Length: 449
Ligand SMILES: Cc1cc2nc3c(=O)[nH]c(=O)nc-3n(C[C@H](O)[C@H](O)[C@H](O)COP(=O)(O)OP(=O)(O)OC[C@H]3O[C@@H](n4cnc5c(N)ncnc54)[C@H](O)[C@@H]3O)c2cc1C
Image (cartoon, rainbow, N blue to C red; front, side, top):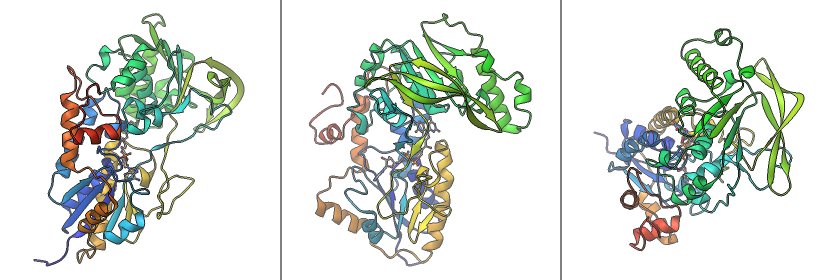
């Protein structure tokens, strides 16, 4: 039996990529002591703050992460932020290996004239708000409007539209925060446009999410038949296997939407293709948006010069995410990722998940990143670790007076949130860090204070 020090590993970020890395490290051949460091008191990254509140089944993956967090070798330190409470270089001195799993939390900005008007925002802010992320608690949204335009043709765009259109009853089994439900459900919104630059065959929706738009209680989907391809078979002819099946399903769903009558229900979600935004219209506030028609050749959309306007009171751009730079780590400005070689960034420094690959891929797509980096760490420290890791980190936390939240604390927050929920709602979320810390001090409950 080897007589060696465990490898001390700090994983920064407790989203899927961070947890898959911890899980893979626990299964690797070398003993590891793993500390997961997270800027919020609450763990799980976009599982809590991104996945839509009415998609609770998807959020259940967090139960697996919880099992990892409860293993003896793993400690959780919430409410500790890298770049603020600790510099990356300091952690690299304390730990043998540091894994960056900080995701890509910023919006890719809409850069057309007028994009700075009030009533224009990115999906990161809107999604953060409806998911009760503390960074967006005070987002001031005027939803006394009838029409919303969502720019983007992926599942995030669909989530934004659905959350705006679902009835209060449809949200009963969700964890939509009360202050958000109050605003959305009082809003006189009747029409939401989902607009993409390319054609229906290029949309990135998954079919379950797309079909869900056809099953809403008060909303009917609308699709222009002249934007449908003449033949679905011909459109997918060059595709094979799964990709072909998925495209056919989406095109069939959109073809069904083209048959639905606009007055079938009181609200409408319009799928609008071949249109790129060129200008936000209005005074200080958005009053509309101008689009240019596009045509797509060899997969590339280009403007035709023909324009049209949609009057609206809110524009949400769901055109992708960007990672923030981390001081002490290299940063590729163009791709907004940390440049890496299969997850290796520098000696003892690694990256996984959206900060490594860019903001694409479902939850499970982060698992291989964790496995690859765990393999690198296993090989790089085959003789065991040499740095103090946890003991030194805990001493530094204490010395700096940083109030960290451990996994028991998180379980307490979780318990209070669940106990505060009504009916079929899974939880009533705390939506500020202060509330969470107060609850741990026994000062407040999630309900009503
Ligand atoms: C709106 C939205 C909805 C989605 N819905 C689905 C879905 O329904 N199904 C699906 O399969 N996939 C979905 N995804 C994709 C999925 O969420 C991502 O693949 C996954 O979350 C990426 O994992 P990650 O760990 O890289 O990043 P994240 O999940 O973003 O986790 C990063 C973590 O790092 C923390 N952090 C950031 N900076 C610091 C710092 N300086 N110090 C300490 N901690 C820090 C963050 O607080 C966060 O907890 C969705 C994505 C979005 C944006």
